[in-house]
Image (cartoon, rainbow, N blue to C red; front, side):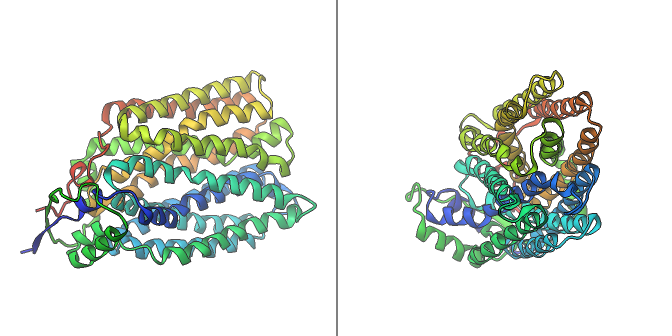
Length: 471
């Protein structure tokens, strides 16, 4: 018979004042989103440059396919490392995934053609995908419940810090007075790897998730970590009696049990997670992996100037989660998810319509993108928040990975290649059809959220989805 015990660890973590420990924790783990933004932006900004004979000589379709290779790697990485994070712990895996990212990104800088470039992008994606699964679960398990929404959205919004960095790096390094196209694109990838190496040194000091240790029966280790955090952060109510939950130590959850719990016990949440992840993945990857091709082909923007057009776009995406994030905790998850998904879809449709009608130039097109993605950024961040908080702790990382893989697999793999083909057709009408499809998926996801979204705001994770090991 399995041993059982009582634990007050969830309540103690949720009862902490936001302090210096939380800020260090967020910086150490949140860098993942900056790295992802940097990677995607560099490839987006370099899309037209990579087509030049003196670089890699790729076609527009191959640029799109390399984006799909990155997404394919992210899918596999999320599934493999997500499963391992639930089994062996969050910390061990987010060190391994970051190391994989470093090696693959350095290798990308040495690519010699489409095959090597796509292969390196695949393994870079594996590292980033694994990071998403291990880190999203760790963040939710260590952030106080009343702040989980705004912190999670703000961390996801830091993706756009990486985007801005990638925009500046690409514009500066591609400048003929600096390195030029042939060497500049290689240096851009190399600098991303150097940033990741620096973060590895910081991340060594991040502890294992006390909640994960708790359900593994390692209560003393979990208690030691929580005591260390409490030494830095005061309690909100030091006189309040800590709520305790009963935990029954069990074996690792099998993949069959995961499928039964996710698609059986939590079927409506599964539909919600799938819809949100699919819509935002298609929406983002369609535009972001090919925006440089749109600007160069339809507006004759010079490749070295692409990065500067991205800066206002990145600013809108960064400000969305920052300014709207608190509302996800105060107004509520359902209302804000529906609002951000629907508005961003309508605005993208308006952008496509104006583009087809010839009403936009490069600057106004970028402005329309920026406005649409102000809301889409908060929407996409809420998708990751949702799938990380509505399933039981024992399978949280794999659940994140599963919905990330399903959504990104359908939306992310298809979108870059599809939009690469649409742009290569040089038809504004065909590209407008792509915009319309993206917009329809976002509005459809808003409708699903209206029906199935969970009122998770300011609730402890164990109340939203009780641990499978709960006694």
